[in-house]
Length: 250
Image (cartoon, rainbow, N blue to C red):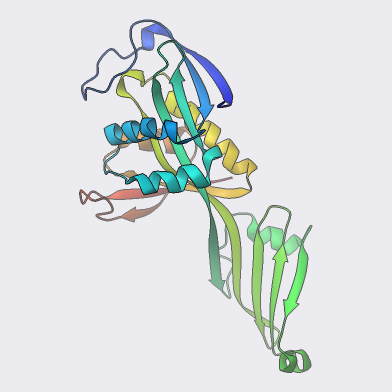
């Protein structure tokens, strides 16, 4: 059975009675929203229906399966405890991301520069050829810390040339809430829970894309959770719409 994460009473006066896109949703009664983990493909159709209603471009079943089968703990569904209707979902994943700089620490993730200076709780390994061992002209040093980050430093003639840090990065691929269930904090709760899991999973940051025209999503991510705009993606979507890439650093 799915794991119940949290229950929330949605106030009657905040219930949105309008449903302009025809998606089914709540009624005038108070709704008890239960948050559950994705369990198996019997729930995939609900994710598909929600995303098809709300997001700007369609996804194939293979995209859903990639997220849901590889990262089921990062898919959370919101269910109306009275009607049993799935009224919201968030879908995410965790990737490995590389940050590389050349003779500079400016491009490294926040806190990594000072972390490396302090060199606390790190394990170093050096890889050199036989010739390099004799001349000490080149070396590659890898450091792994307790936060799951791996730092690779290339040295030539004793001087650092390139520094590459490999870290885990969370990614929110889909967030959807039926319009008749909005303005109840369901989307906020879904994001909060998936961010918590990503942080606990060793992520140092989380990224996502949102349409430049979607001011409500930008307010949610930037004002409430502290995401920052990292990049403008021109003609990012299939409908040629632009997107902002947002990032939250833990």
